[in-house]
Image 1 (tube, rainbow, N blue to C red):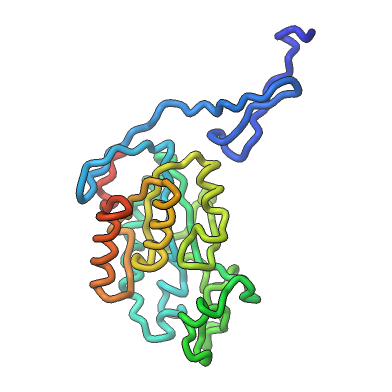
Image 2 (tube, rainbow, N blue to C red):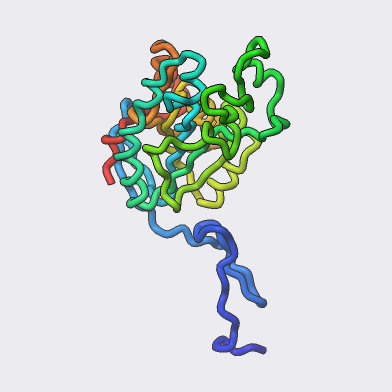
Amino acid sequence: MTEPSQMPEPIALGATPAGSWRVSSAAVDLTRPAGPPRVAHVHADTKDLSIDLRRTAMIVIDMQNDFCHADGWLASIGVDVTPARAPIAPLQAFLPRLRVAGIPVIWVNWGARPDRLNLSPALLHVYNGDGRGHGIGDALPKTGAPVLTEGSWGAAIVDELSPDPRDIHVAKHRMSGFWDTPLDSILRNLDVKTLLFGGVNADQCVLHTLADANFLGYDTIMVEDCSATTSPDFCWQATLYNVRQIFGFVARSTAFEF
């Protein structure tokens, strides 16, 4: 029988410490020690919250050239992108604070296949109703970039929000960042339970991703000043109402104490 001093040192097996086993040739430790919570306080609109920073992540949705740049797709079809740029400054201030606190930042962006094989006609119709416009995958006349296509200029994050090398990137091809993507698996491996949300459009991709997170059992907090929409104001007000009433909480980035 092998003496304790001769037992092989267990090795962490997994992508993250929180999600790893400890394995050796003789044993497997499945316990995944959680460690003590790191509590921070948030003054949300409706209630004061306590969150565990160790189990929290920030999801930033669609802060991309095609939505937020004057040469992008939305601007090319006559949409005023000024509202979509409103979250840039708050995110510039908030994201570094999150990273210092050890909170993962996850960029969830449109990034369709170039051949559009993951897009249904129903989805394509939303953005190109008569088939003669410039919808997802079509090259914009001004830049030549294919709209919201993975790897393209239009799908890239705006320059003002240069990601950190530690950040995580997930490409989506639906309004929800959870549908047919690895987002849920990534969050489970990170041992995350509380999700903060920002980005555009608040009433579309942000809300649908937040709602799916709620359905999957995550705690959800919309960061109001880090979110925006180019839709009419009543859409914005309805989104805030629905998040507060049904899905979770709304708070400003300055309301997070950590």
